[in-house]
Length: 311
Image 1 (cartoon, rainbow, N blue to C red):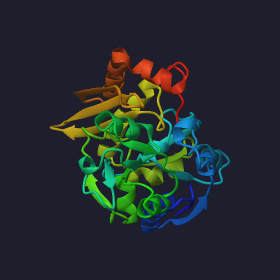
Image 2: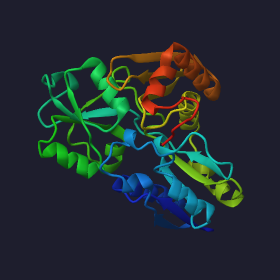
Image 3: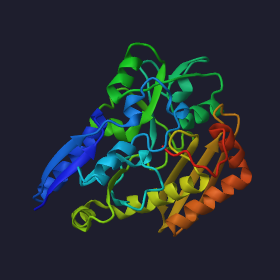
Image 4: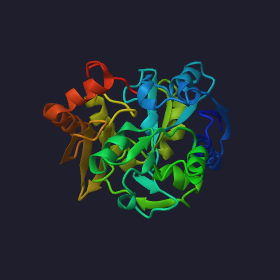
């Protein structure tokens, strides 16, 4: 069996993900090594992601390692991977998806609606901020960066009344002790690809691609393909107020998507069904653009929506 090298960010969650893939490959007889690679997003820790706007901020340096053949594959949180990959790279596998929803964490309050007027909520996501403000404009939103342990520590120190995080990361790290509520999609539409792991490799590395086929989950591939097609159509990235959630219902895909003003004053919501993931995502994206999403995104980017600012 070939020896495989995995490229990964060095955060606690990223290493859990890389080690998870590593263990599955070892079960099939591979010798596996993990190379930790520091990305632009890891170096910029004091600024909200929405203010950075760097394309590939969590993937660029890892892709450089792939291109230089230092690693055979990269394990990403799929939500961090740009929807347009260079022709030299391919999405070799989308692994079985964890819960894609967001969760409400607090020491004192059992659910989102219990938060007092003027409550302090931690999140650096414009998507989360916009949806929170749309239903609770009285709440105060404050930046929250750092790994899972750092964010939980800030909650436990009393810096916030509540924080909003992805369910998948907390489940993987077994850090769900402060979770008080799983937020329904109609309240908090998740990020594109949230909960899924994407395995990236070189397009010309047929041997590695063949070894990764077993990791690909058809249901996760289809739902995330619809969400990523929506994002591609909108020209958006993970640091902008776009949410999407696709699910299989009665043999077809149902895609729910939102584009929102960061202050929550306007939330455009669209839901459609279809059998073709790419076509469904593009159709919902075009519908949102026609309803005014282009103006919202231009204001967020400070540039034409035709020039994507992907993560």
